[in-house]
Image (cartoon, rainbow, N blue to C red):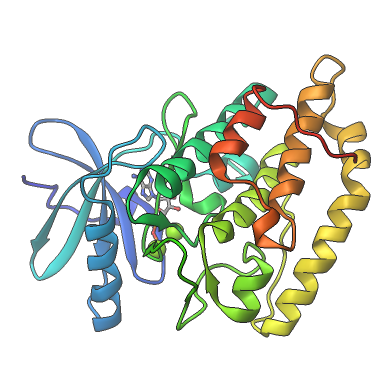
Length: 287
Ligand code: ADP
Ligand code: MG
Ligand code: MG
């Protein structure tokens, strides 16, 4: 399929360390997002992993890979286009069209949970994403969440303790056991999801970490959890609760707290998170 010939900056949707993403129109008129790789060996390996891992995966909350091609020696992945860009832009972008409503926020939390639950619980071997954060969550025209950027994602084998050779990801969204020991499991994504939910619900950045020192990360992550516990009611009372949604807001915040527990085995599975958020399971912890 012929992607556009023109990769000019005005069509640029985003840029990362490994390449840039452009809006493009295919010969049949459909709009897509093309992720084009800067050529370099490490990039190529990650790029191929991203391609292999998500080709053939189809779920309404995971961005769809429509194809891939090489043009002028540049490798490209062609994705379905997400009209409303990424969640960081929607939460705190200067040019965001409006503030997301409570219903939209809740729908986004549920959508991400469904996408992760599919990766963790329906696939064999399961896939962990490893880089869940607002910039990697895309929003379609109806503000539904689509998980994107599988550059760090890995398959994990059940019941084996896998360790990362390199702790890649984003500071602040790391779980303590991943930051300190490199332990790879689906519970890493559950933790990052907990941080993300707090950001989605509060509309504030919870994370402002810069230090690459692992010990530091661990301490700050722990401090962050305490901060959350202390501030939760405060936050809910001041900013979010409009009266009729009080119970729902608190229930979502409790679910996020469960996801942020230090002991990974205590964190819920993502399918349980979906049940908690959609109200089919009561979330029983005191905050
Ligand atoms: P990287 O691996 O470089 O972080 P991503 O896949 O996360 O690349 O894409 C970078 C940015 O490009 C995203 O944060 C988003 O803003 C934009 N983007 C990526 N894919 C799409 C898409 N399918 N539709 C719209 N925007 C996209
Ligand atoms: Mg990204
Ligand atoms: Mg990436």
